Image 1: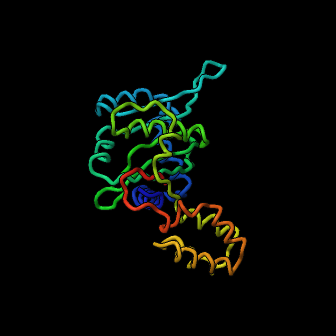
Image 2: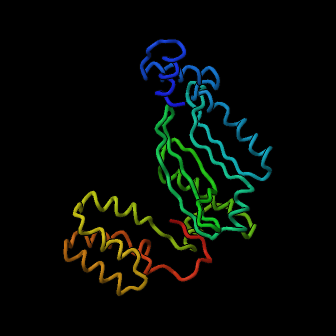
Image 3: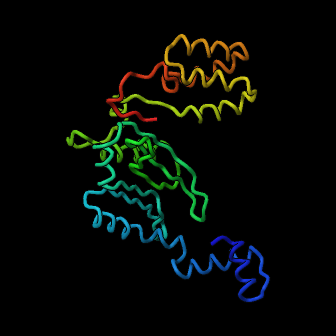
Length: 248
């Protein structure tokens, strides 16, 4: 129920005018009474992980806590992949993986890392996810090591070193993210169409033609995009066939 609907219902049932802020406080109090304080849920992660393994045999759960000097442990990272979901990706999905992270902006801050694929209907197919206290090279390495262990099709066992394993796959970058960052420095609308021409070009001459148009507007804009490695964001340079995982 939305806060405004709650406000209207209280006014109708009890003939009392309350503010939206009062409704929000009442809703938060009620949720805390029913479900407990959100911070307290982190102390139940071990039970949650055990419940996942019990209900979904073969699932992969990793829980890390950081001990403090005062004998209190603080949440650090949590990884989950369900066995049935991973098997579904291996058996029925294209070997394309998209990884990304987003900020958690609620009471408990942190970062949500995720790996998703595409199913046979070209819909998003979640593979694995993790919550970490901070996004950096170490947490991404930890996440990718766990992911590579889960999707090890050969079944030979994966013993870390995702950099070596990732060298075997074709990497791609999100063109929309590149354009968003590009637009912070080069705000003119004249760049947008030639950029997408370069992204969607199927042969190198067409890519070069689009990039020359961008260069005619501003050499700095051209240099910026070239430094982003077109091999990872222009279709003209992508390999033919999708027989290997594509991390992008």
